[in-house]
Length: 362
Image 1 (cartoon, rainbow, N blue to C red):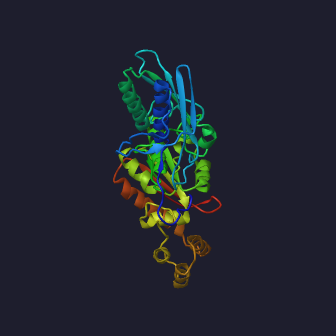
Image 2: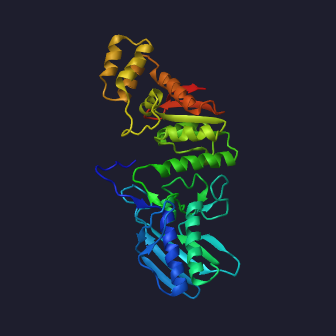
Image 3: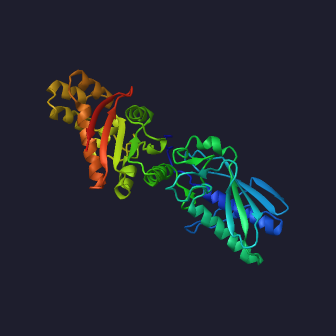
């Protein structure tokens, strides 16, 4: 995860806001022959930002406008991408039809906010585009029957860096956003992807999902279970985001897998495992060795250790099963968050080379 810069952070705009603004500009040009530049739209919470156009083109029965996405100071994979809307006149009575252009994905699995077969344009961006079309159509005395094609050139390559392939969104990116605004380092998009992964798992009947802190722990689970890609939820540091959503939307079995340091934080009760938002309590960790019967010298060495990994090495060398202790306490934290939801939880603590060094089952 990118490091959050110091000082005030600049907000940005979602792909959904860019798509809505590009759609409004293109439809205006289709109706009047002139592109508004900049083009202003109203966001769901009332803001009315203006967007400069990077693409303008039109022909018989169609117009196209594009906007370069500015994600502000957020480390967004789509920052700098061009979101292009092509608006074509539709048959009378056809309403508004959405199409996926270059670099925009198509939904292939159930459980997402739009059904399989539809372009991966989420409901709020669809509504923003629909409202822009309706407002312009009313102002010009036309019905507003149009086809809206959204494209993001290079989007298919960018999508490989997102969770779209695991969610069954193929061919490109999603057009996202519920407010139109990107709040820097809010991690909302990551947590949103975890939630959508759970939705897909439930809709496709999966009995087990997996939350891992990184690729090493994920590989350890892959060696243990033969599961489809959709079972892996890319939890990262957001254990709380995963567990709280599962509490309301349960899946029968959950495997949590992570490194010793990350899960030591979970064991202590932290639900955000990022190093900038929680730290391993070395006194607490040393106390766990003491509870396991470690001698005073080992406990003191653990308290003075520089890292949790150093504590794990000291404990392993002395035959003290601290990783299993951490797994048990991490399991207790998970079950506390789940509050009796029908989810059987398994916790795997993994070392730096991918070996499972501690586990617990609920």
